[in-house]
Length: 114
Length: 115
Image (cartoon, rainbow over all chains, first blue to last red; front, side):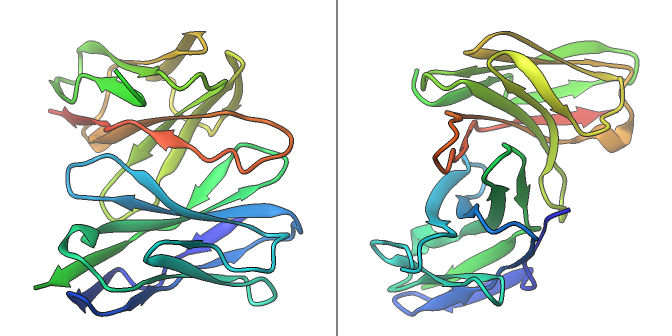
């Protein structure tokens, strides 16, 4: 079964600095999708960024980018120019191509210090 | 209303009560999901409905009973719950296709407390 591991329960970053959140996963599939979701305190979970495994180019969405290392089964999220509104729980998620069973990591709580 | 909505947002119930959680998606999606989110644990997928048919049930206790009357609505009927069932229950939807990431869109959740 696929598993997703986020080894950092908590991280903190100074406002305007850069932070990287780690995620590793275990799978025997070759085609799959990876996601980072953000869940602000008492607010809705929203999609931050996604990566298709068949694409070699790392996904980027404004200040958010990923470092996708397929061979290492690693999928880290980099947040540049951190803002106070980035403070949230961040979840890494995996979904195989042929099913709708999405597996989530345990999450990383990010604190942004002013 | 836009996106995925859930009602109620908070629910307190006794172990002998019967209650229902409601989810509605306004995105035209064809799949809906129930997740349980407990503190310091990964999200647990409970049920998946695709085209209104249940396609997955991850060994959830029978005291949780899902219902999907159409592609826009999803219910979770609760009865005889235990205190350990206290958690945030999240609903999500996606547009499932053979080719595509099919990312899920989440509702705000129902915070359930079982006394």
